[in-house]
Length: 89
Image 1 (cartoon, helix red, strand yellow):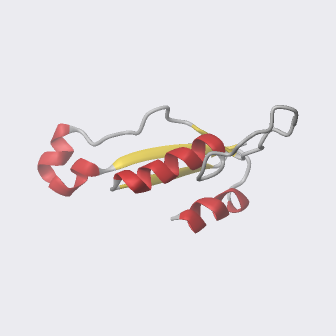
Image 2 (image 1 turned 135 degrees about the vertical axis):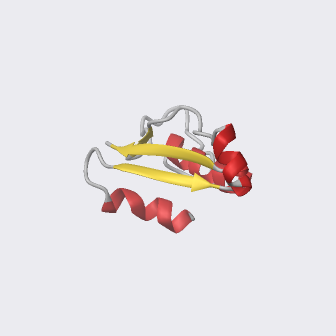
């Protein structure tokens, strides 16, 4: 999952979108953090440094898109799915 997220900005064109469906909370956290910060872990910033981290993807959806009740009735496995979308700057 990490390799896919790290390589995706180099494959996408400007304005291209990346959609990821995760089925576990750990996967979802990786995707959320990468879309939000451009990194998997918290990056410490020094108070006297002015080097903001430039990440290339911005989240399109503020919260994950969850399946509806009808989808969960037809496909019970979809209950844990979360869709997150990000766009390349």
